[in-house]
Length: 159
Image 1 (cartoon, rainbow, N blue to C red):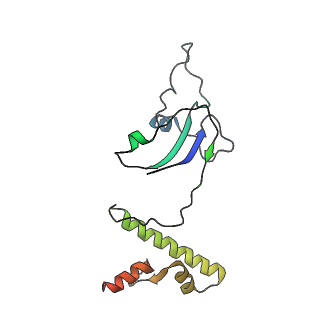
Image 2 (image 1 turned 120 degrees about the horizontal axis):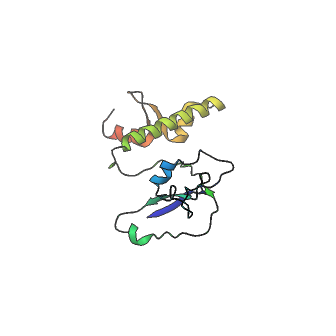
Image 3 (image 1 turned 90 degrees about the horizontal axis):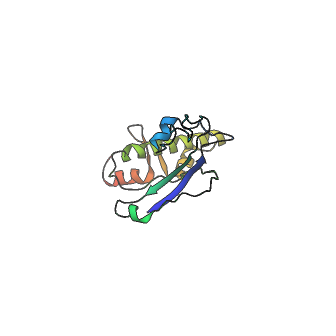
């Protein structure tokens, strides 16, 4: 189980803005129901800055523990926070998800491209770079595969 905060931002202002502010429709989809409420004087609310605070969290929980284990509480803190998470190690989980195979192919394609760029920029031998990255060159289908998988395929007689 894990939770981490990626983003927390006061929607009433931004300077500088990393992206366009969320639209009314996007805010509504996040639960902002008060945008079109009339003001206390019975007149329509003044448009402009949006009185909302957007928070984006990433959660890894199962259905049995989430409802009891995490409590969110509104506070007066309106400090902005934005994190940039760079994942340098590919996911190594099981193959239950239908997108796993394509994800792994894409990771290897990306690693091969990074290795080629490094070799081109530095003049290093591409095979040395691949060895350091634990990659092997293209297989008979022209696909680059991780060294561990290539070894497993050889052991199983798959070419």
